Amino acid sequence: MTIASPPGGIATGAERDLPGPHHGAGLARRNRYRLLVLLAAVGLLLALGVLSLLVGARAIAPGTVWDALFHFDDSDEQVLVRELRVPRTVVGLVVGVALGLSGALIQGFTRNPLADPGILGVNAGASLAVTFAVAVLGFTAASQFIWFALAGAFGLTLLVYTLGSLGPGRSTPVKLTLAGVAFSAVCGGLTSAMALKSTTTFDIMRFWGVGSIGGRSLDILPVAVPLIAVGVLLGLLSAGSLNALALGDEIARSLGTRLALTRVTVILSVTLLAGTAVAVAGPISFVGLMVPHIARWFVGPDQHWILPLTLVAAPAFLLAADIIGRVVLPSGELRVGLVTALVGAPVLVALVRRRKVSTL
Image (cartoon, rainbow, N blue to C red; front, top):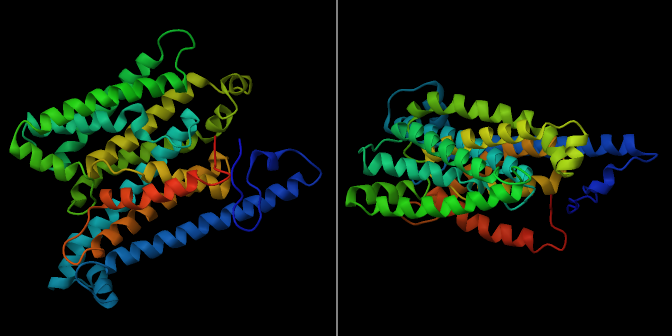
């Protein structure tokens, strides 16, 4: 397991953790560096959160934003901040956390640094269920989508896990990946067929399917936040087991890791996180794929640091993409799902083309 060295010449590969005469001092120095990176990410997230309230198609003074939050007087600009920008920012934070952590977990689980939640069919199952709710049942609000998205995510993930567990060797990352890709393709075809069934369904799904955190109400958060919180807790509790899995199943088992429990916990966490995020904002690409990859480059292969850094960096990246989408066009805006793809694709290509690229 190797990883590129971050700026400053601090080694981050597995070789740096080998015992030696200066191992204790070196580990403390590395942890101080990791903590600084985490604190810098927190500062960046706070700055982008404030910027998300300030920046948009209409310029609003910082004082007006402050008054909208703490001295609301029902003026047009304050209503705009309260009713549009605050929900947009909060949804971006919540969805960013869910997308980023689900990506980090699935990369550690499959030992594939270029994996994302779609690899287990989570996104495809959620999208299929939401499309069914729109095309067949006539639902149109995001608050109505969430239970369908979770049901679809859970159902397809369970089907993928069951199929991937058949035969010798039980559930291995390779078998789960192949099953996930196969079912994702089937669900994608069914989703497209239902979306084309009627003009109304197509109109709703073509906007929802791009992915956006704009135009979302805070009314959905009382349902979404507890589900994401459970997913975050399960994911963080899996950090040690994912570190052991990176060494291989046999070594992980010899170290006392309960493989079946770890797999069920990670899959449940990814399903809760990705399924809820898809229900709230639609399928947004590259956040769960790219951010954990970058986090690993900065803090090394230890999941105890990758997961917390991803929790902070992913919503920061999503908010930055959303801010860019608001101002990049002379009129109108780009939905955040398009911006993450446009920004994420070249960055990811650049990372992959590095002479030393982070691997699991």
